[in-house]
Length: 303
Length: 275
Image (tube, rainbow over all chains, first blue to last red):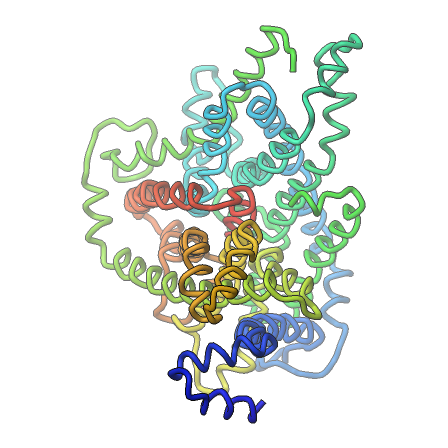
């Protein structure tokens, strides 16, 4: 390598930039190394290194008097999480919320995605619907959280809308949390379902209709089975984003706690990083398990 | 699909209902920012610009906005450089571990923010703090850049795959070296994808709260942190509302532009707005 550098540098036919160019041309591996060194340092050393530190920290403990880290391997954190019934309740509640959010988003996404992909004829209207659904993704998480708070809060917008009927809204709490999270992640479900419907040939629907199936039957027997990978792709987002969330529940959840609140509180208030790191295993295991379980449906190619 | 007139109407009404579900709460925020009431109340009784003025002159909001802009610019710059480099490597070279790299790039955004957050937090505590680097704007930028790389990567990679390498080969055949080829052929081809990726990276960083919470230090408050902290303080409601309304208006345009410039609007949005 050194020899070539000297050769290129002493080449009389060009200036320094030309010889640098020639050197790079002759050494694709050097070009590749130049491209990859900095990004890999960042992602592997900084990011994967950090994840590794966290995984290791899950097996540490804290000194109950000083609160300082005790870096000796122990399984105590996992034992605490598995045996304390409070943690079990929160884990089950969080899974329940994630499943509810996913189901609600599927129910909301199907009709609008179907409308855009198969019913509307004009391309412009079709794109307008897709853009209208995706734009709020960028409206800001906290802005939407605040919007949801104004809806659900006592004497808020929902109470105001229901008042003429003599009813009252659910207020802040579990239901508000589920609906707010469904609100936040809805675009993540609409997009893959829309893409899946666009790929679905119209001829299949026509064939089904020609054979005498009413629209509802065609939907159940032809559309839904072919949409499974898209629905699963959407559910990966709604499900894992919900599992990792702890902010929305603070804004609209009243006193409700989700699993990530346990992680958050242990890093912050309780200053027990090892327990937090151990608690982080739960969403990682569930998400990775879910990804492995759905891999065979072809959903991962639909992301 | 051949649907009866009635089925079309039902579907249309449900779709309109979903759009109302999406936009009505946002509209309420905008309307309520002109509500003269000093505490949260709905419906508004009288009109005022007071909260917009107060939000615009609020010291905390200004400082937080400046912090957010700095963090966003820092993280976006790093993300553009690193994201573009990886996408060139992945699209133009074959090497061992190529598939793994794409996976590692996506990982910071695929895992919940709180996991990326505490991982970086514990690593900074173990490595940086003993070196004398304390939690502050710098660590926030490190954290944000980590999950912003993927949007630049996705955008530029999609463009590079679509344009192929034939133009570059033609340039080389005509005697251009790698540097000139990059300057005159490759860069102009990916420029708009870079801009789209950069806008989205900035938007992601600007909206981030979880990773920020775990990587920022005392005295550093980004705009989302300011909103979150004030959400639980009394009498701050109207100002938060005005800030939220301003953010809504400010976000729509750049994102719309980014969507138009990007090759794969689906892919762009799907690695989207993690909290």
